[in-house]
Structure formats: C-alpha cells, structure tokens
Image (cartoon, rainbow, N blue to C red; front, side, top):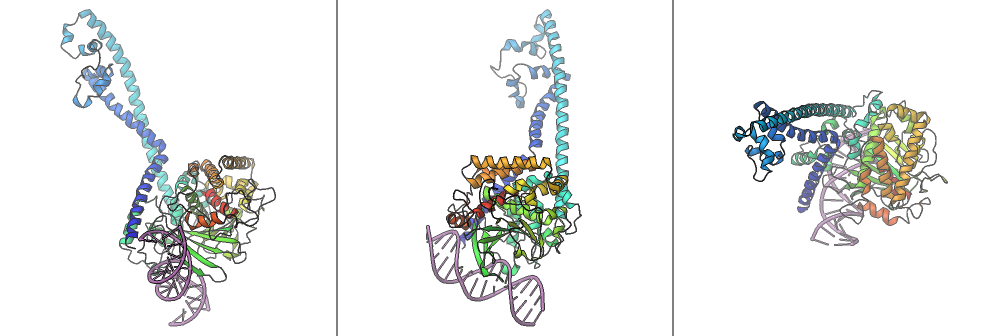
Length: 576
DNA sequence: CGACTTTGACCTGCGC
DNA sequence: GCGCAGGTCAAAGTCG
C-alpha cells in the first residue's frame, strides 16, 4: 500500500510530463500558424540581425559587401569572433575585390581595375541594399503579423475563458447557444481534451465541506499543472482520499474548485444506455470496481468503478442494468480524466464531456429542467422527470433535469432498422428516425450511435443548427452524406471496426470542427496498461461478444458485446 | 505478490 | 432528529 502511491506518483509524473509535453504540442498545434511565423520570424530576425549589421556596416562601409560576399558563409561561422577570414574559406582572388575596400592592399591595386571594381561593387551594393530593405520590411511585416496573431489568440483565449466561466452559471442568456455556436473557435480544445467549460461543468460540484485539503490537494494541484491539460484534476489524491468525509466526489479539490463552488451540488453526468450482456461496456479506459450497491427500485446492483489509469483520476462510472430491460446496461460517467488517454478512451472521454457540455450549455442547465423552449433542446432533448423512464426507443439523447445531477442519457439501444444501418450493425445505425429527435434529423448522426447532432449543435453556427432543426437543408444533407462516406470508407479500410469507426468519426468531427482528432483513432484500441482488457470493461465486452448482444449484433461485428460496445465507442467517438 | 473484486460498514446529503 | 438512499472505504478474498 505504501509503495502503490509512490508508483502511481511516478506514473503520474510521467503522465504529467507527457501531458505537459502534449500541451506544448497542442500549443504548437494550436499556434501552428503563429509558431511557424515565429520560427520564420526568428529566422528572419536572425537574418535581420545580419541585415542590420550589414546596413550598419554599409554606413561604415565595408561589412555589407563582406556580408554578402561569396564566402560570407564561412565568415558567418565566425560571426562571434569578428570578421576574421577562415583559412581556406574561399578563393582569395575572389575576395580580393571585397577586401580591397577594407585592406591596405587596395591602395596598391591598379587604379583602373579598382575603379571598375568599385563600380561593380556599387551596383552590387545598391542591389543588395534594395534586397535588404525588402527583407527588412518583410520582416517587420511578419513580426507585426505575429504580434497581431499573438494578440488575437490572447483575446480569443480570454473570451473562451469568459464564456466557459459563464457556463456554470445557470443564468445563461438565451443566446448562449449561439455563443456556443461560435465554438469552432474553441473546439480544438474539445477535441484534444475536454474543454475548459466542459471540465468546469463536469466538475462543477463541490462538497460543501471545504475541509483542509492539505498536501493532497496541493499535490494534485501541482500535478494538474498540466493544468488545463489535466482537467479536473485533482482529485482525490490517491489513496489518501478521505472520501466519505468529503462526500461524494469530494475530492475534487481541483483548481476548478472555484467554479465548482459556484454550482454547489451540480455535477454533470453522462449516461450511456446500451444493450449488452457483458458486465461492462468497453470504453478504452481501465477501471477498478470499488463498490457495489443495491439501488432503490432496481433489482440489479449498481457497480461503482473508478478510473485507474492514473491514481488521481477523478473519473468514475456507475454501471447498472436497466430495471425494465436487463439486457440494457446503463453506464454513467462522471468527471474528467486527468491523464493521457488511449484513443478509444479519449474519444469516450471527449464524448461524455461534449455530451455533458451540451447538456449544460443551454437553458437546460437550469435546475428545473427548463429545457423546453431551447431551440436545440427541442431537437434532441426530451424532458422527463424520471431518469430511468426513458423509453429508449423513442429518443437517443435524453436529459434528466430532475435527477440529482444534470444527466444526459445517450440511448444506444435502439433496434436496428431493417436495411437501414449503414453498416448493418446492430441498433447503432439508426433508421431514419422519428422526427423530433435531433439525432434522427441528422443523417450523419444516424450513422453514429452517439447523438452526433450534438456536434453540429455545438459547433456549427446557430444558423446551421437551426437549419438542421428546420429539416436539414441541402447543405446539411451534403455534409451528412460526406460524413456517411467518410465513415463507410474508414470502416471499409480498417479491419478493426471500432477503430475504424473512431477514426472516421474523429475525422468527421475534425473536419466539422476544423481541428484534428482524426489521428487519434489511427492507433487502435486502447493501449491500456493492463492490456488484457481495456479495464474490466474490455474484458467483459470483448469476451462476451458472442454471448452478449442481443439479436441485433452481427457476428462479424467488432462490437464485442454486441452493438452496445460499438455503440458506446462510437458514441464516444462521435462527440470527440 | 500485486492487482482486482467482493462486501459489509461507514459517511453524507436530503426529505419528512 | 431520524431514516433512507447514494456513495465510498477498506479488509478479506480471488485471480493470474
């Protein structure tokens, strides 16, 4: 027990480093343009230095010529040491002309040749000077652009922070969604990692007992350093968690506590309903069961799992079979991973994050479940008062406003439509669905178990969302078609169905969001530490593939555990 | 032996 | 204040 934490700590550190590195990478990616400019600028600056020196030298005479002389390269190597010529740096005769101006030997040269040489030099000099000016100007211009970009980025980032900070507040403006519709600016974060808002939202709950989170909290804080990268962080400082005392999820003594404090008692959850005989659906993460309870009103026990991919990972999930239909497995996710995730897990995490964000993004966040009236809500939310009473066949994404926690339920149990499924896989590939549910309105969504519509809703301009609501205009259809094709192609190309699907959806999302992410799926299934199974889940699913899946799951399907698994993963994927 | 699961006990929040 | 339900802890057991 003693060593465990240590080991985990080391692990964490590794993760931290990785995440930090990742962050940097991300930053680089995000600022790719700026950085490239920067590099360019740096280069130019470097050159500019030379240029300026050259200019200065010109005034003083000599250096400019020398700078651009043929063996300037050799001389540059000696920049630090002055302008001493390197032995063998070039033919002396070639440099003679240049040196004529700088050495006493010039005086001894033939007057006529000197004149001619001087003229040539003047011409060259003027040409070089012009070139130099041009370069300097360009350099200034680029530098200005860089500064401008940097400024813009800073401004945007600030705006993002402001927006995300406001999300937790339930007093959102009706047009919040429209604000979100501007997400394309921010979604890169969403893809790469749970965006700030999502994190805040998911971590929005704090235990009223603001006990002294001493070291643990501090450490975690530090570990979170990767900070933005490692979301919710903190978490329960491993092993040391004084859970009970803290109350549920207490331990989220993370940096976002502030925001959490703003929403005491609120914590978004994403519930995924999928058909599976397996004890757990595979989501690419490694989980450890830490408890089981009989829940009221359900003969099936509820299992509690904690993410073990990182000691301090605050992510938890509950798995319970549906009381009405025991073939349906309900998995509820809560929190954000504070560590690097394997592709599959990443997609899942992002999916849940996105779903949660979607859940809380609109008026829906209001405690009373005032979803109605929200344009987006009308598309894919169902307002109901019993989280468990979702008639799964009627809706894909459901919001439970009355639940203790704002919970969005992704229903992946819909039966396959005859000949409708793109891939012919179980219930995931929806038939042209019932009007009114967002997912059904969106063909692309139809191909994705997860309410893909969410992405559009979240990332597309409000107009687009409205259009979707209006019944899918031509453009939208085309887009959907593209999505379908992408998915089909990806699946066809990759034997690993799940991976392929993830890749396809990621690419789709990347395309729609304008950010990467597609690459995530390239590497296949979860490289989880304990390879045997992506956490118990994997085992359960994979292993029970055959037994699982009720009717609908085709044999060949990679969807272990039948469609459910597929569903889940895709679900995840789709949101990323 | 380490990691994971099981399971009873404990803690906390909430409604009455 | 009490009881209930949800959630978590942690010792004991299991497994590879």
